[in-house]
Structure formats: structure tokens, C-alpha cells
Image (cartoon, rainbow, N blue to C red; front, side, top):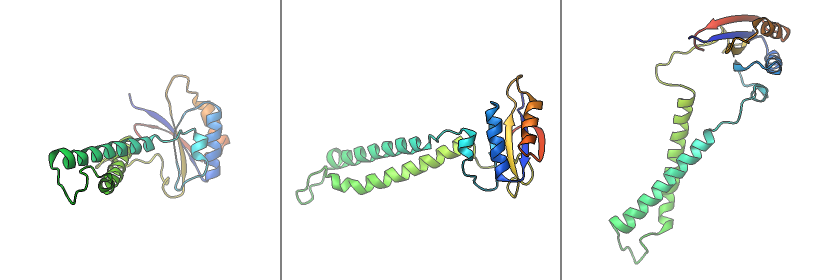
Length: 174
């Protein structure tokens, strides 16, 4: 079953922000908001939670650190111990540069991979814009019709009152 979206376009950021607040006050769920530049307070007005991406970075870095420490300890103590000037085999100071580098490398690569997976960005994906001019000078608000209780007339009235220039329905994926 294809998704049905309601797309409203606005001419300025204040109208978009006002529409987001008005729509959320009436318990409509916002699919996404599109703007040519970042708008301060839009995330809070839309009710977007903090990202869990830092947890991916932390866990990947922790796994990389654990791997680097255990691998270096195994190779220098059990697999190929070398007596260099009477120094101990498991010298922690010698492990620090490799541990740091692997932690940063694996943490960064895992963050980028998780971002691409979560945002569904992959090579060959076709771009889709909800309305013409969104990347230039238009602001858009997209709402997905989810259930039979979706009151289209009430939504259109709220959007018109908030300053929407154009309201249209779109079937398919955004």
C-alpha cells in the first residue's frame, strides 16, 4: 500500500515554524520539514529526540580499543615475546598510540556507516524532493496520512491559517 503525504509549502522560515507548532498542537504527526538552510528551534518544535548515533560511536570505539589492547597483548606476550633491553613484554605505554588510532578510526567509520544506513543513503539512490524549489527558496512541511482518523479538512485549515502557499497530496515515497 503506497504512502500518502500532505505537502505544504511556505515562503519563509517563521511561517514554517508556526505551522509546525500549530500542527503539533492538534496532534498531527509530522513526517519531515524541508528548508534551504537550518532553522533554529525547528527540531525542538517538531519533537525530534536526540540522536542515538553517539552511542554507535562509543560502542564501536570501545570494541576497537578492546581489540587493539588484546591483540597487542597477545602478540607481544604469548605469540612472539621479544626481550628488548630487559623491558617487560606487556608495556602499556607502547600500546597507547595503536589503541588511540584504532579507536578513532573504527569509531569514525562505524559512525559514518550507521548514519548512511539510518538515513537510507546508498549509491544509486534517486533524489526526491517533496516540492519544487525546496533547496532554493521554499520551505515545506510533509505529513503522512496514517489512519482513517486523519482529518484532511482540519489539517488544510490549520496549514492555510499558518501561511501555507500551496497544499498538495502526494502518493508514493518522499
